[in-house]
Image 1 (cartoon, rainbow, N blue to C red):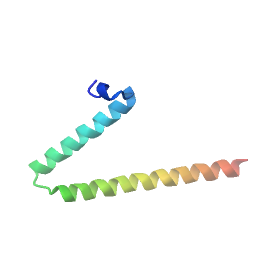
Image 2 (cartoon, rainbow, N blue to C red):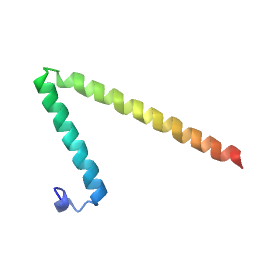
Image 3 (cartoon, one colour):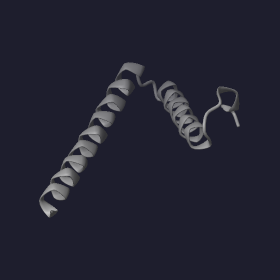
Length: 70
């Protein structure tokens, strides 16, 4: 494995590899299409915030449902 020297679990190494491959692909795409890296980073930040908001709403909904079920 590419991250075996870091002594990471296989799932963690696979996730890290996927993130690095995705970041490299987006960087190559931004060079090919002449998209500034700042614009790409802004879009990525907005996407991460959206995913965190969805996760927070799902966690809050799960917490509320578990409290009122009893």
